Image (cartoon, rainbow over all chains, first blue to last red; front, side, top):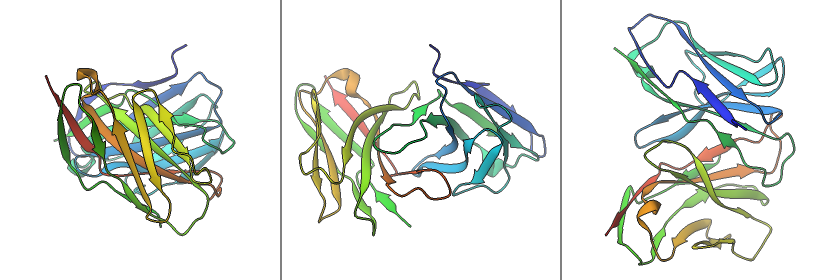
Length: 114
Length: 118
């Protein structure tokens, strides 16, 4: 059981380049999330999805786009990368209902934009 | 908007001793959930412990326990008998009980880096 996987694990981009980060989960979770982690700021929510074909903005959505064409996949796109997007990106997923259902995190992608 | 504050950027403790990590939060909700996540050097986020706000009893998971003070909006993590494997970044996180725009989102603190001295 792989849980939540992210591709790639590391990437270096030049300013203005584009790329897509792929998140996949095999737990049949309804909800999926993209976070970014910066030093001294914890994790901040970029975008999230409550089901296949739906997406919504989080706390820091500017410069990113997402798509959820399949329930198990959640893609994060950078159309024109900027140095401010240098960060570690985490994908997470969770069950639909509330309570203390936890979010399961992927291993992260370290992105450097030069 | 809810906020979570971890005022200790770094902490250190001797192996086998006890350490307490602090977390405070701000919310107007009466029902919510609190979490502590551990992030070792591997970067993997691991759930350590969770607390429901409606429960008065503090949560405990083996060597990990919390001191939940709802009125003070405080949620500290106590690690007993510290082990070298406990060295990591620890994040406090808040999640409200209301479904906003279809999801329940986590709000994280800034993190506390814990070092274990052998």
